[in-house]
Length: 186
Image 1 (spheres, rainbow, N blue to C red):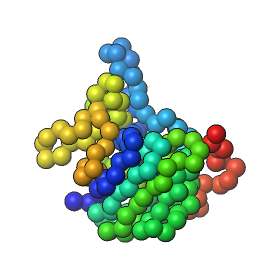
Image 2 (image 1 turned 90 degrees about the vertical axis):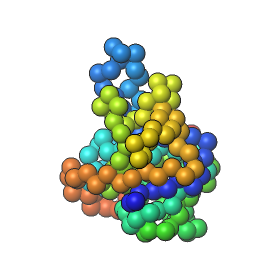
Image 3 (image 1 turned 30 degrees about the horizontal axis):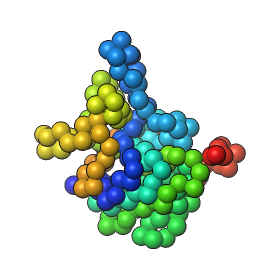
Image 4 (image 1 turned 180 degrees about the vertical axis):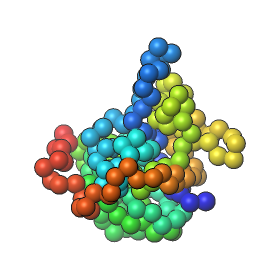
């Protein structure tokens, strides 16, 4: 299987996209990323459509193992990302090779960091969105026909498959977000 395996999800790691629109009349909140700016920049760096699903990590620490080669972007709160123990810069895109471990320390400021993957992540859509909203019990993963963690945070051993969605635009020419667009996290 091509994807990311969850080794340690930390306090709270969720699948997010831009959220469910038009379902409020059903009593459903839209969900989506808490830091929309960071989430959208991650997808922009990779050439993904803005709604491509990614992983939202709250506070950290967290770690994931690559089950295939992929290009990823890391944006949001500073959590000191490392690939096989080598520190990586936030607000950049990177090549993650099969077998490598992507890990995050606890946030030094801010709360949420995002992992986006070129082509997006495969997650079932409920009411038009893959966004996880725990209180509505929506979002999460489904594998081999069984629903696991639906509406819940990611668990150790979960595997998030790659989606291979077509790119909406050419990947950002830079491998990083220009400094003037990076917010200061309290």
